[in-house]
Length: 140
Image 1 (spheres, rainbow, N blue to C red):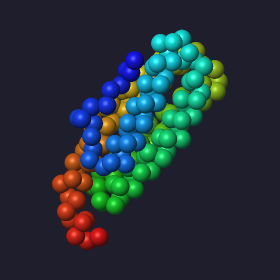
Image 2: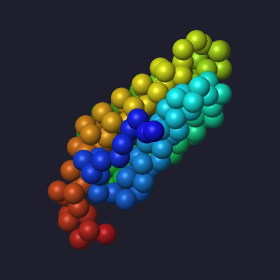
Image 3: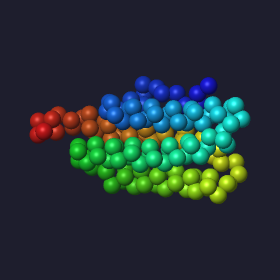
């Protein structure tokens, strides 16, 4: 039973970004399902490894798109990405150190981060791109 549901309000209009966001939702839901089955701790390492590698890939994709369209708040958005990456790698380090109650913490972090970041920061970027795409299509 999923905890995070993909909704139309999360659609950015950039297919690759939407697909990556949906994959991140699937990671959250996989952890949640495992927690319900009492197996959250067993797959937490796998989840954190996927999250760490995919976060880097996803943020690189977003940042490349922001640069392509000369997004004016790029530096601020990238700083938020860097903070989120740091948080993911901190969680991974805590898992390696066998910190207690980490499964719930990871699940909450992922759900809050993904939904708030998509609905807030990412939609600002994609609205800017949508409103300015015509300028760049003529150039390219």
